[in-house]
Structures are given as structure tokens and as C-alpha cells.
Image 1 (cartoon, one colour):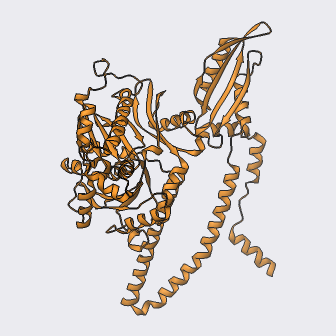
Image 2 (cartoon, rainbow, N blue to C red; image 1 turned 45 degrees about the vertical axis):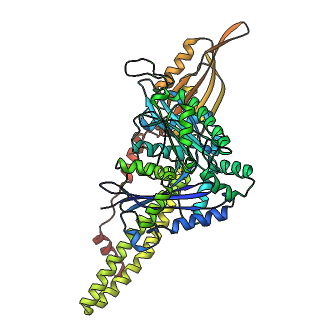
Length: 592
């Protein structure tokens, strides 16, 4: 039976972590895990070499380079984690009610004004969809395109292409949900330079942030206080309690960031996605009290002695160290029995730091919750590569079948060797007609592309003018079109001036009834005075329907109706060709 495999890679400040999971028909199995360290992430060449060692450590690394892999039904994906501090999130509320297919376009339009950077520099997606009968709410996740390409380049240098890029807090939430998280829980993953903060409620990620404080900052404080080198400081901090100096200074800063994060999470407790928190009876919910919540600490920074005690005392929240690997094993989410002895050693030593790669792998295996920031061009490249592999597999299978038949015929009946040679000659003859057919097909496709109708602004202006051509009642003062090269995402904006509300309403009704425009939205109507006359002004936005291209083409190139004379002429020109025997008789007469 075919199996789905995923290799998840988390490239951190001082370590790169890798987890390999396999999804079978019965369970999810942890096949391999490994961690490599490097002193500085700024040295890209050293990081690439470390990742290459990590990749080479896999027992069976995916290598689609041999003939056997072409016929392998098992699917392997490579997923990459993206740190939370490089990701921006924002709740988009009160979007128009729409189907799943329409929602992607609506989010894309709304993102143009909501992203913290230019749309052409951004990669974004959305998740956590909330619907009512009148509106939709989603959480927008975005990052800079250059950020993702820089991370992907690290893998490409070792010949690996990622099929998903998962934000780290999405990954942590995936593991927490699989671990069983019945109570409102704050999950804090303390890394080397950054700490990820997640608020989970009812198994759903409600809020996340990242703050710049981690294990390296503690090492630096210990080094400065003890006046020693950084390596000695890293060893000494393992024996200094969270409440003792100099660790206590770092602990105070850490708890202060936790208090800020908890305060920021309060508006994001269980809501309906539209800014209000309501329970089944309609009463307003409040942020759960600290007695009802839990605080889970994980990551290498959580190993500070008595850090849980300090947090529980200062925050008055039940606090515990959380090993995500132990949690998902207890809830039978992942079976580790198939892991190698080396992998089990890594799990014992680094299990409490693997929340991100484990979550990345689980999120990738679950299509319903998969949240990826992989660029569209990378997705297209993967799709094209998959199709090429399928074509090569089919061609390889055909070659094997033909070769087997030829070899069997040659060994079983040598007397038929001349037939095999004749068959090879016949196949060689087919090469030239196939080349000619491909060339002809290419020319026809090029002609078809040139004849395809492309929408121009004049088509839209002509259609609008035909709908409401009375310039004494209404006038267009501004007209703007974006994304016209892709009609499905084209956005049309124009301003109107009219002498009455009725004229504006008439135009809006005409737009809604047309077979060209949809999603017609009118802004607020304002009034002004010109030459002592009251003028009504409004801005209108709309999109093009999928049938707009055909409608514009029919208007620009109307098909002529054949006349009676043309039909009669065609009938006269319909002359049957002479029979072959008549041609032969005339030829014989000429010879005589």
C-alpha cells in the first residue's frame, strides 16, 4: 500500500532540526530525527554544510533520481519551518459571504490594503475561517517573498526542493491540538534568539506572537556577570536557578514578556471571528481566569532550573515543562517504534525542542489544516516536475514492456529476428511524422493564442456606456482597472456624478443584471453643489464574471447572419468530385 512521507526541517539560530514521519493506513510513524548545531546562522556556508549533514543522516533520503523511484507509489514531501517573527498575522472580519472558491479572490483583494508591505513583495495565505449567514472572517498570514526565498535557497544548495513552508506557531498549535489541550493554554517555545508564544483554546490557535528573548541572551548575561567566555557561560547557566543572579535578571525579563503576551491574547479568546465573544446562550465570554489556564514551557531555554516555579509564582498560572514528543506518544498521535536507535537517542536528548519540526510534519500530512507560504512559482514548478516524472514513468514503463517483448521474442524464437528489425524500422519511420505533427500542433496553438480575445479597457467602457448612455443624468469622473490581464481577478473602480439617487440606483441595477459584472459594491453617496445644483457622488467597485471574455468578444466581433443569396451560392458550389472510373476512361481515350 502506498504511504505518505514527510521530512520536516527547522533551521534555527544555532541548530537545525529534522523529523521524518510516515503516514500509513493505520497510524503516523516517526521514522527518523536528527539535530545538528552550528555557532552562527550568519555564516550561510556553514549552515548549508550543517543542513547537508542533517539530510545525509536520513536512513532512506528521498532521491527521485533512479528508475525505481519512477514506479514508487510512496509520496515524500519536504516541508520547511518559517520563524514566527518573520510572519505577520491579521484578522480580516466582515468579508462578504462567499463560497470557498470565491473566498480566495475576496481575501486577495482585501489583502492589498491590509498587508504591512507591498503586494508584489508579499506571500500570503489564510486560515481559521469563521462564517455567518451574512459575513466571513479569516486570519491573514503573510511574509515577505524575499524571506521565504532566502530560506528555500539554503535547501536548494543541497539539491532539495521544499513543497511547503509552515509558520512555526502554526506547527506548535498542530502538535498541541494532537496532544490534547482541553483547557485554555499558553504554550511558550523558548529558542536561542526568539521565543514563540501561542494561546490555544478548544484545540484552536487563538493568538500568537514572537519576542526577542531566548537562551543566547541568558548565556550572554551569565558570561558578562562571571567575566568568562561564552562556552563556559553556556555550561554554567545549566546549574544556576531561575531565581538566582545573574539568571534572575533574565527571568524577570522573560516573565515581563509573558505578561505582555498574555495581556495581548485577551482580546483573542474564543470569539466568533467578528470581534465579539459569545457562548451558545448568547452571553459574553470573558478571558478565562488564571486558575482555569495552564502554561506550557518547551524548547532549549525552558531547561533553566526552577523556571516553571518562578513563572507559576509570578503569573499565578499552573506551569509545567512540556515535551511535545511525550505528549503525542501518550495520545497515540505518533508511533516511534519504527525509529532507529540513533533517532531514539536524539529524541531522548532533544525531544523537548522538537515542537516546531513535529508540527510542520503533522501539518503537512493533514490537508485540511495545511497552512503553507510556499511561493506560487515554486508550487507550479513542483507540479510541473511531478507531471514530468509521471511522463517519464509512463515512458519508462513503455520502454520496459517493449524491451521485454522484444527480448522474449528474441530468446524464444530466434527465427523471428527479421520481424523485430522490421518493427524497429517501422518505429523509426514514425519519428518524422510525429515531429511534423508536433510542429503543426505548435503552429496551430500559436495561432489560437493570437486569435484569442483579450479584454481591453475600451470593452468595459463601451459596455458601461451602453448600459446607461444618458449623459444628462450621470457621468463618470474617474475610471481605474487593475489585473486586467487576469479577468478572474480584475478589479474595476469608477466614480459617478449624478443629479439624482434614482439614476445611480438604475445604473447599479443594470450592473447587477448584466452578464459581465459581479460583486458590485457602491460606496457612500455624498453630495456637493455645482452651479447651484445639487450633485450626488459615489464610488463603485465591481469584478468581471468568468463569462465576460466571451461576452466582450461577441460584441466586438459579431457573427454575420448568412443571407439567402449566400446559401444559394454555397449550394451551387457544392459539386461532387468525379468517380475514379471516369478518370481512368478519359485517360485511356487520351492515350489512344
